[in-house]
Image 1 (cartoon, rainbow, N blue to C red):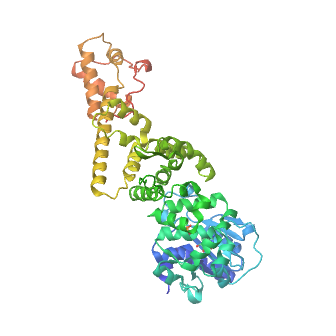
Image 2 (spheres, rainbow, N blue to C red; image 1 turned 135 degrees about the horizontal axis):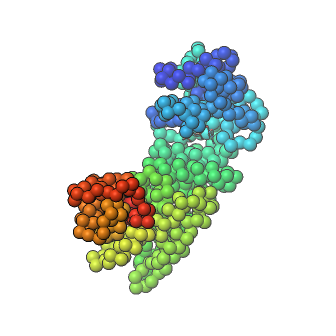
Image 3 (spheres, protein in one colour; image 1 turned 45 degrees about the horizontal axis):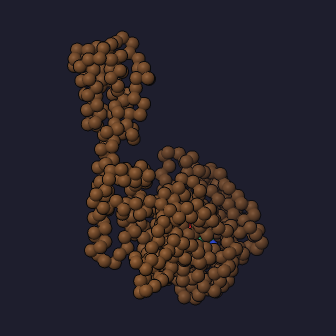
Length: 505
Ligand code: CTP
């Protein structure tokens, strides 16, 4: 297979090829870029491996492109960005499609590891380098050399594995995973992102070596976990993690949801599979990582709150409050951010039962209002989670619940509009009108005020001084009124908070 034509569409490859030829080293595009090229997936990173010094080649390319090169001497790698060294530094005229991050490395016999602290000791051939990569689909190279420019170099049948949708290590999986145990998670992450199977020997090795994950940093594990969560059907990745035995090691709280207990013939649903279904349902509706985390954690306190009551069966009273309390601890342990993202997840876990409690016909405005205020700007996300939480297999029941949610949402919207209208304050006050025209309290003042208010409510005039003052003057003129000379707006006469949200519905 030859990719010469495709490579010619991006000038960076010709520059690299020319600089490599000038330095008399052979260079190849390798890894994820090649995989994504075959899969026709977009990618932004280009990895180049050369038989010689990757740093020298990078510096030569950097000089030609006139861009800075960042050198990691210990790793024997160097990196540059085309179209501006930082995305925000890129000139506005640069097409984002021309911004590439290019990493250069000399081929080595050592294992390739993005965070290896070991210095590079031994140079190698292209084959040595390919041998030491994680999966056959990530070990394909494309030549940038004059004699065979664009030629695919695929010693392990990566192309075939892409076609057959298989994740497989190039060497005996025990060797590949010993080099970097994070690769066990990467196997599952790629399977989940691409909808691939993991080849049985590779999977068996994960099962056998799962404990080795303990030497990997939490940040790298969480990075892979987030990629699984963001994949199209995350439940698939989580089931693989569970069956491999990795989930118990990296996320035991989730595994604790698994299982069904039966007492006196009464069982409850398996909250592990329920949670994964909710996660998939959210994934169908939103790409937001944090909303997906909220789905994953919404029932996390069910094991701790589970009780059996002979009259009603199983209960999980208070699991939403206890679950919300557990969120910061889980985030801390996972090295996830402890900022507003965490507070968002916590809020959604705490509120996830509230909308369903509002389904009752005779619901009071104050109950609705309390939810509106508590959910604030996250109401839509909360409703997405609540809809996703309906995992009944009974079609009629699902339909009934969804219709009920429509009703609750309508009621919430109506109340919100009513509240906004009631609390609405135009920026222009009666006092301001009197001062502007030099008037005493009179009918005209009220009429001008009403006209301004109506125009703002209609949306033809914004509720700001800049827009409303000229309109007020215009209305005054209709009554034959002229503003006082040197009209200045006394800030004390202005409504500071024109409306709850600053906008009029
Ligand atoms: N690689 C590896 N072992 C690792 C990490 C990376 O062998 N633990 C190799 C693979 O050949 C991989 C390449 O380095 O294709 C680039 O790694 P990375 O940028 O992490 O992944 P990509 O494959 O590019 O995929 P993504 O961008 O989706 O993370």
